[in-house]
Image (cartoon, rainbow, N blue to C red; front, top):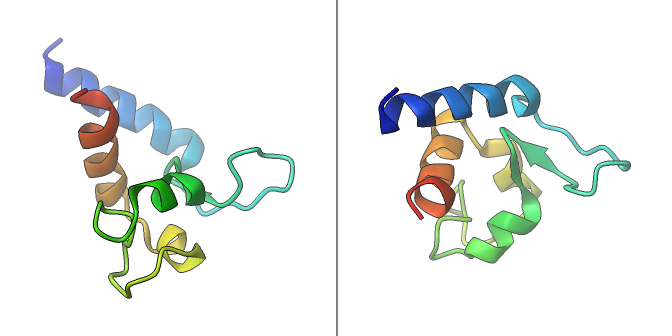
Length: 82
């Protein structure tokens, strides 16, 4: 399996479990979509990729706006490639 194939397989697994917006009070991750949570987006900040909807603020609207492609790009840059 190639590096890229392994990444795609990992992302498919994440999407299977984290593919919809969720805000479960029993989930420590809080607001999450495609495995991307609010706190992580806030850590990235407005200039680091956390402002998904480009309105100058990182908030719940950004979590809701996360697409599968956004999640792939974030995970590849912030985790996989490191």
